[in-house]
Image (tube, rainbow, N blue to C red; front, side, top):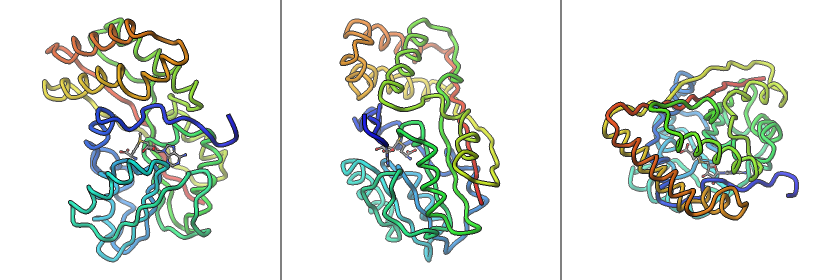
Length: 270
Ligand SMILES: C[S@@+](CC[C@H](N)C(=O)[O-])C[C@H]1O[C@@H](n2cnc3c(N)ncnc32)[C@H](O)[C@@H]1O
């Protein structure tokens, strides 16, 4: 693996994007919202299917400009369609790599990356690059899940096997699945002098949420980038993946089922 290369563990299959499309600025970037003003220039790196990007574009619009970057042209095509459907014309989309952005020093008032640093080869170098493109006095906002800190009930062994498999696979791909707890350290290592670190969670505990989250993972564990890498690396075979998928489906219909995702988040300046 050469410098600054990692494989994006999830891939962009529909079961993955269905999960990412549920994200909004309110449920995924609340810590950033007090910083936003109409007229700001905002960069959203690793924008994925663009649902958070669209909310951010409304918040800095109509005069503010948003640039949304992703390393995947396929997902950017979906983001373009989604943004057009929302009637937003203040967003420019571009293929790019967080480690070497094609923008000038200090070009943006706000730089945002949601659930991206956990997937990249060098998160400190990536944060240095985000720091380079933010204007003096501007803010960099990053938020990432912490897989090891995820917790659930009932304590099904299949879900424990899922977590172990996910963390092994993400690390084999060059990422860091327990990124949430490391964001403060990474931001300090990247040279930021003023860092505010916090956390917030997503909880899935209603019948609808359980079905959506459980079904999404049941599908992803047999058919996404996670499944492909797990098979290639010999971490799990088809039968083992099917057992994990069954466990997710049992959890999804259990009225006692509860799942929490802890996210680390950082606002960084200086
Ligand atoms: C988990 S998704 C998050 C998408 C979106 N921010 C959201 O929260 O809905 C991570 C995204 O980062 C992109 N990505 C991965 N590595 C990247 C890199 N080195 N540079 C830019 N984008 C990258 C992936 O293609 C993917 O769309």
